[in-house]
Length: 118
Image (cartoon, rainbow, N blue to C red; front, side, top):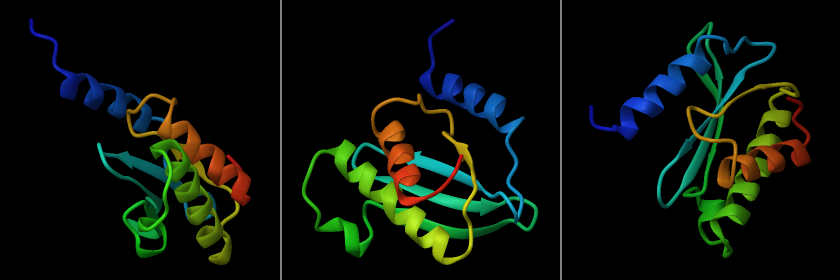
């Protein structure tokens, strides 16, 4: 059998999502990482609504200079600020099948620094 990265990531993602579920009181913070950008959404799974989102391609963050890890940290702080404005202080972190390392870890640390608890 050939090694398939996409199938492996999907398997990991399904295993994670089996135990993670966002509620209005404690929504799920889902991370998406592409080669150029990183984005995050705070999701209420019961109602199927995205409550808050932030991305490195947003206007306020697109002009920032730095490494991808530094920009991911800024995205984490940005989503934390927006979530706290909406009254969300606690979340469940969904790394979405990505390893908790590098940009994903930096985004989580930025969100914690911004005031979110998880």
